[in-house]
Image (cartoon, rainbow, N blue to C red; front, side):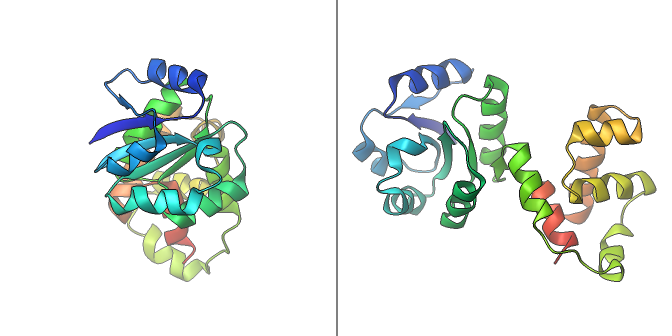
Length: 196
């Protein structure tokens, strides 16, 4: 799956090209994006704000996965875009490794949000009663249960590592095992499973 980037801001295009340490295609005309098929399409929010819904529908019809980058990220904008089918939403000037990580997650058909937004969405979920939750948690080891409950509460890997006195890398390994055992793709999906 190729990566296509479009922005009406030349400085953002330059920044994104530098950040991506793999080949990507730069599209300079918004109309040409309608011809892009089966790609991760990275666009800046300001470029598509006026025609956002129709623009996104055109991109999504062609089996694309859309990643919207915004200079001033907002949780309410993130929610609206996710409802429209966007696979990622983040800060247009976030660090290079976050951009690469986001695109890789989106290529793997996962949703990517800045961790703070993921935490906010998780904390908005209603809590499930203990017995229903226990059905899912019984599939995990005791340490995985601890990690899963902290992920469900919206904690970051760093916070979990500090609380459990383990490394963030170990937290990530436990998280991947949890996702596999519970057949979910990420911590937002885990929170939804444990609260549905």
